[in-house]
Structure formats: structure tokens, C-alpha cells
Image 1 (cartoon, rainbow, N blue to C red):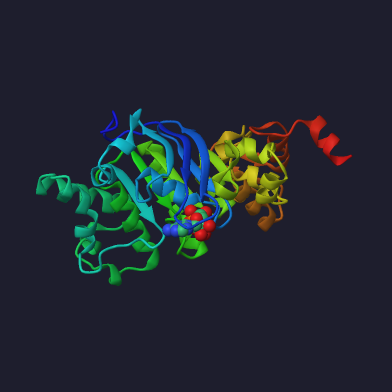
Image 2: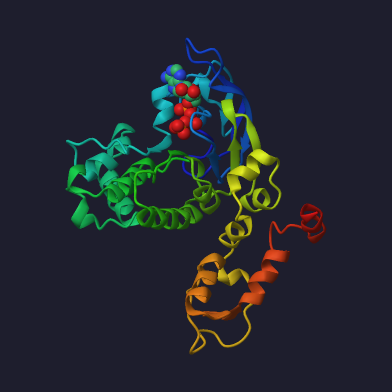
Length: 333
Ligand SMILES: Nc1ncnc2c1ncn2[C@@H]1O[C@H](COP(=O)(O)OP(=O)(O)OP(=O)(O)O)[C@@H](O)[C@H]1O
């Protein structure tokens, strides 16, 4: 439908506006945004700023008052909304599983509507359950009420992926889970997206979540006006204005540490060094710092050598998105 059936495609919003009937001001006002193919863009902003309205215009759950939306170069306002929605994955906080259908039936719904042969749908459902770490033999025939909140949210993500759509819209899909489950789901999702490279728009209130997941972040103000649109590292290092800086909070350096992994830094010395607290590959520098503090030491061992506190500090001075030293000095005056 969009040029590619499964791989991410570009999304363009041009002059996108929504005025709900009876409201004085538009909920979304003249939004212009380019989302590159295969990237995950997070919309972050305060409650009521128009994140959900903007997202729902892209799968036409809300009809724009004016403006254009192109997906893979195609003007989607000229398509039939039901047909369009079968080619865009959609996952929401409330999950919205059908209670009278099994997990397998819930996940297989869109492929079935698209007319996939039963055997292909069945194979896809098994594959997706494994992909989101739900053992197919245990979960396929259960009903939604027999799953925990976190498990239901995984099913929601699996269902959004079911027809392997090139575009996914995700509205706080991990919002209803406790912090530990949420962090787990975020990590799994980052891994998954590295393989799948869909074009994803992800809505959240949570700036930490935006940093963890986003290739780019759009920080939104009232009526979805874009305060800044850039990579997490650039936003953390150079917030466009006081509004964006307010979103980041005081701990920009710690947040930047969360963006880098231990394997991103040169590590000297023996790998997996005896006697030092170990961290595995994929550990963020922020987690590595946490390990050092917890063990009262200024080094830890990684699979590629010893990581030191001094190397962490150096990475923050010179790594991606580092603030030039003159600006730090100027800012301190
Ligand atoms: N169906 C509707 N009719 C009238 N006004 C609406 C409707 N839906 C949303 N609004 C208004 O539009 C504005 C934007 O709402 P929207 O839900 O898009 O914001 P949001 O940023 O997603 O908020 P939240 O983070 O709280 O979910 C709000 O002022 C809201 O009250």
C-alpha cells in the first residue's frame, strides 16, 4: 500500500490541523514534520498538548480539519480509512484486547481481515508470541483476563505487529505497567525495533522513556507546536529553549550516560577482570556508574576490558552530544 509492505517508510505531515467542533482553538495547529523511513520518533509533551490527536490523524481515527499526510509518498487522506488502518499497527495503553477471544485469536485478527490463509496466520501468531517472550504453548489459548497487565501489553504490541505493517503508532503502550515491567518492556522493544526497522511514532509523557526509545524526539507544546525535533543526544546537550530544558530536568549528564553502552567506550586491561564488579555487554554507562557506586569502586569489568570512572567522565566531555567546554564556562557565568 505504501511502496513497502513491511519495511519502514517515510511519513510527512504538512500543515496538519485539527479543530474539534465547539472548541475555540484548534487542538493541533499547523504541524509540519518529516519522519524518516525506519526511525522511531517519540512525541513527548504535557497532557492535553495534542499528542494523541496528532497520532490519531495518521490512522484517521480523527479526521484532520486541514493539511496533508503522506506515508511512503502516498496521500493517505485519499484512502479508505478501514483499509488504511489494516496497514498501520496501533498499540494503546488500554490495550483493548477482545475479552471473548483467545490471545491467539486477538493477535491473528488483522491478518484474518486481510485474508491471509489460516496456516500463514497461525504461523505468524506463534512467531509473534515468541518474539514478545510469551511461550506460545502457554499463552495461545488463554483469554486476556488470565494475563497480567504487562503480559497483556506485550500481546498489544504483538497484535500491532501482526500483519508486519511498515508503520506503527504507539500511544503510551507500556503506560499501565509498574516501573520494573515497564523498563523490561522498553528494553525488549528497543531490541525488536533494531531488527524490524519499522517507522514508529510513539507517544509518551515520560522524557526518560523518550530518550531510551527514540531515534528522534519531538518535544511538543500546546496545540502540538514543535518546540524541538532532534536526536536525544542533541536535545540533551543543546535544548532549544527554557521549555525544553524544563522537560529534561537538572540531570542532563546522567540522562546522556543512559544513551551510551559500555561497548561504546574503549576499555583497557583484561576482559571480565577477576575481582572487579562485572557488567554484561549492552549495559548503559548510567547502569555501569550505578554498579561502581554500589561496589564503592571506580572501575568495573566488561566483556571487552576494564571500564573506569575517568573514561566515563571523558565520554561525557567528548562523546555524542557533549556540550563544548566554552559553553559550559559561559553558562556558569
Ligand atoms: N473528541 C474531542 N472533542 C473535543 N476536544 C477534544 C477531543 N479530543 C481531545 N480534545 C481536546 O484536544 C486537546 C488535545 O487532546 P489530546 O488527547 O490530543 O492531547 P494529549 O497530548 O494526547 O493528552 P494526554 O497526554 O493527556 O493524553 C485537549 O485540549 C483535549 O481536551
